[in-house]
Amino acid sequence: MAIDTRGETADKPRPSGEKKRTSPALFYRQIVAELRKVIWPTRKDLINYTIIVMVFVLIMVGIVSALDFLLTEGVLAIFGGS
Image 1: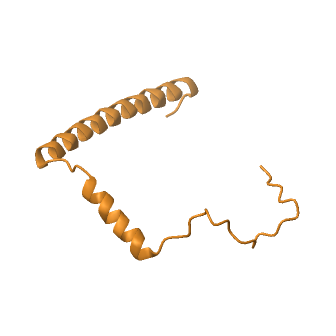
Image 2: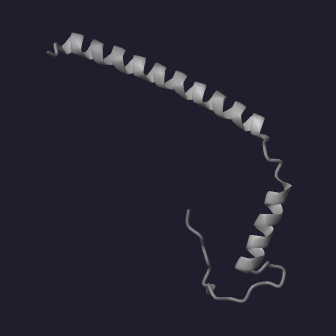
């Protein structure tokens, strides 16, 4: 998508309502303030979530492996592999 500048220069002064960039120190303080608002999971929740993710990943690995094996056998049967 093209932007039509209509002859305006890129270095024109900013309108007074535009925000300026923040300093790295202010940015860091804002990050720390936001992280303090986060409700972190308990150890029990974290272990539970980890087990759920691992079981899901193992199931997906099994499905993909089975499909890979079946498709490989099918291709070899059709095209006569050794």
